[in-house]
Amino acid sequence: MNLFDIIGPVMVGPSSSHTAGAVRIGNVARKLVGSDIKVAKIYFHGSFQLTGKGHGTDKALLAGLMGMPVDDARIPRSYAEADIREMAYGFFPIDLGDVHPNSVKLVLDGKNGRHREIVACSIGGGRIEITEIDGLAVSFGGDHPTLVIRNKDIPGQVQQVTTFLAEENINIGAMQLYRSRRGEDAVMVIECDKEVPEDVVGALEGLNGIVRVTYLSLK
Image 1 (spheres, helix red, strand yellow):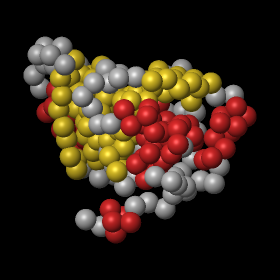
Image 2 (spheres, helix red, strand yellow):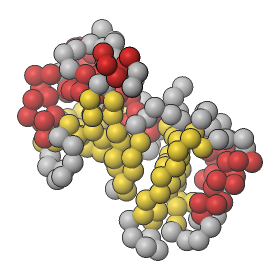
Image 3 (cartoon, rainbow, N blue to C red):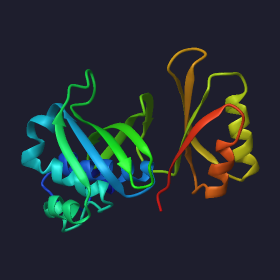
Image 4 (cartoon, one colour):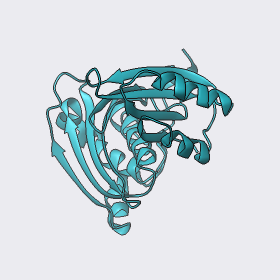
């Protein structure tokens, strides 16, 4: 445990889970899209839906989607800022089932033409967890440069990717594997010790059996 875990983040309040966590979810989602957001449909679940308005969760999430940090003084004015940027947005209730009560589903269209559907939750102290991307289960906190690699569920895929990253001098800090069903789509979530260069991400996309590579950069 470190000092951040005890006192929480420097932030615009009132709540680390409902406000700072929501900003961070928005920030990570924006990076997963890879551009400014053109259209955002925001679906609040559980406590986010019931008490989020009073905690400013809507404003915080919107601010994060525009790239604002957790201590940005503009967070309370994020509606006006989104209108200035001509970012279309809407807030809706949703029941995501048996998930963390501070959960949200984001349906996003970026100005780069990329569409992403992301489910995430705020787990306290400003920490978050991304739990789903485009319908496939994942689990990562957005604290490290992260590769989310969607691949065909065939033998040799993990070895191919890890060998390629080793050859590019990219060290793997943590790795998780998921699949929807045997023989169908699978996902590798790889947290790296350093940023992955753009050309390496592009080369990964060209490997045999790789369907899509989503990269979370912390830059």
